[in-house]
Length: 387
Image (cartoon, rainbow, N blue to C red; front, side, top):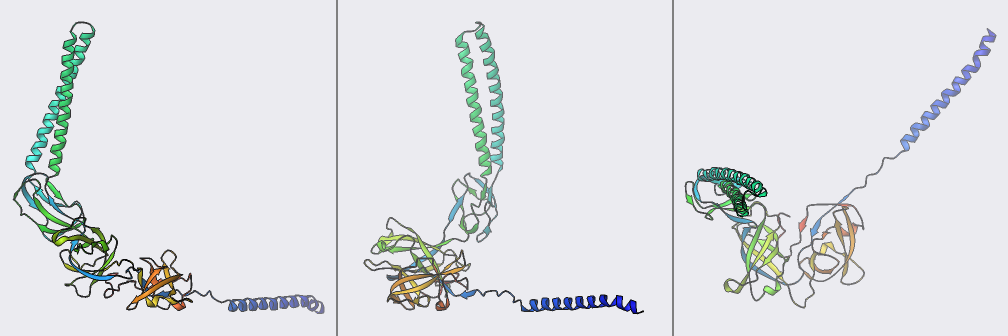
């Protein structure tokens, strides 16, 4: 019995040691896990922004105008006849290539059938003329017919070829006229006017519908000859609508007439930026433009809240948002003069730049940010709708 105890004793000591080692390792592992700190996700600061577009100096002038669709057309048939279907009504929204009206197809279908028959006849004549020529050519080579006879059948062959070409063209024209009995919409838009009713006899080119393209709108107004030199393509203007109180949109001048019209005024067109559905063609509009002033240093109007102070007078720092990296970049700007809460910046900022307008003293160069609802610079009126 004593020997058995002495043999078992070393095993008990070894297992006890391993137990304490295991417990110690587990404790250390748990301790290490408790000390690990989770990764801190940096917060992305939300900033208010302003898109700078307004010129910084000039005389504000207002002009009365009217809204038009940028793309519009008067549709008519290229063939005449009786209109048997009018598939669109005034005010209808239509898709591109949608059939709007149909002229009676029967006369044009008969023209196609007639042209096909004449084409078959011309092909048969050409086959006979070719066979006759080949026969006469063989005889001529054997010396059995005169050259004049061969030349005669060659002329008939060339005439048959010309007749076949003519009949082919005639058939193609007949098929084209048959296709043109359907009047289709040239683009997505809406019918602004319907000129005729069904079962009306129409001639080629007679107005059937007026169509206006969807989306793109422009304002047309006249500029007196005394100030037309102070207007240029690309100038921005603020548009108000008497029938839509509180709606103010941006527009950019896209066309300036080269010839004066009524009262020696030049026609001008300004394209609206993303007009809402409430603005429609035909509405009256009021355009406000800051005219260029000669000899005056002009810049862009930037909110005072967007400028952080710099060391020298007339200078400051603005934080420009970069959409590619979603960061702001610190930029030195120079300005002179102010209008209300805007400063005239003539260096360091260009039209279209998006600047931070709140908390600029807490921003750093290259900081990642996200934009709150963006608004457009408008020193001439209320906050811009639809931007």
